[in-house]
Length: 333
Image 1 (tube, helix red, strand yellow):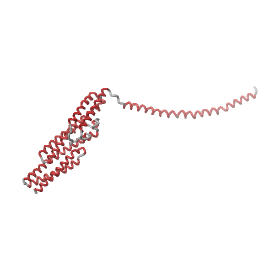
Image 2 (cartoon, helix red, strand yellow):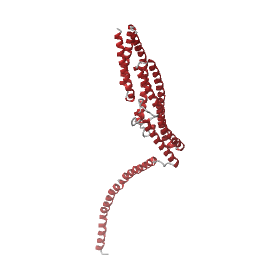
Image 3 (tube, one colour):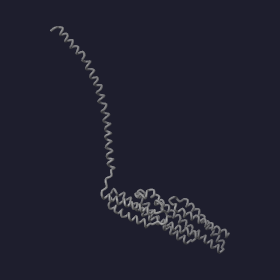
Image 4 (cartoon, helix red, strand yellow):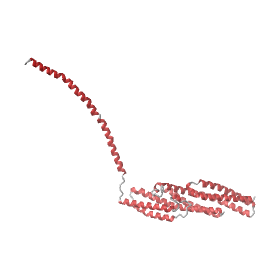
């Protein structure tokens, strides 16, 4: 072989071996730099972000399902209609109860005239039939509403036991007031005893209202909102207590009237000492009654305001009687 040809071939081979390291080194370096960054960055970030998002979605689904109200069965629908009718009839009973007195149960007080218990009972008897129908038909989930309607009816029935007694008590208190003014001691005693009887019967109904009913259930009848219920109960309580106090006042009036009547008789008989002594005793008793009755009238709350005119009348009468007694004392001094 020609020597120059061999040398040329060897030079070409050596040139190829010298360039290989430079080419191979640059290629893996670029690959190693990009691969870890591109591979590791998305994987940890995307995996945890997706998990909480997917977990939150199933949480809302059971909540929406649980709040759905199942449809009423045909039997339940009939029960619901019976309860609706009963509520309507109880609302009518409230309207009849109030009459021309105002807009709510509270507008009827012990001083109300022409109150018709019979008319209200008629409306309640209409509700009785529908409540009985509902009782035969209701399901367990309808029982709370039935109980509320029955409580509202119970409240109105107890009001009908209480209200007429308080109105009667007011009448007896007025009769006793007139007897005080005309100085009829025996009638004062009889009217006071009747006042106490009526008050005691009213108190029994009032106690049952407090123990057997409550605002939340009674307010199932739109005509008896919770505020009206609470105001009516407060009114009953104030009037029951107020009539108790008035009866005590009448007990004090009676001996004062006896003293004044005796002083007048002794004055006519010209028995000056007895006229003076009895007259002074009467004057002192009537003065104390006038002061205490003024305080009682002023201290009456809004719930017991119906008794205020009656108490004010009695205070005026006591003051007048005290003046009459003092005149007798002066005439016989």
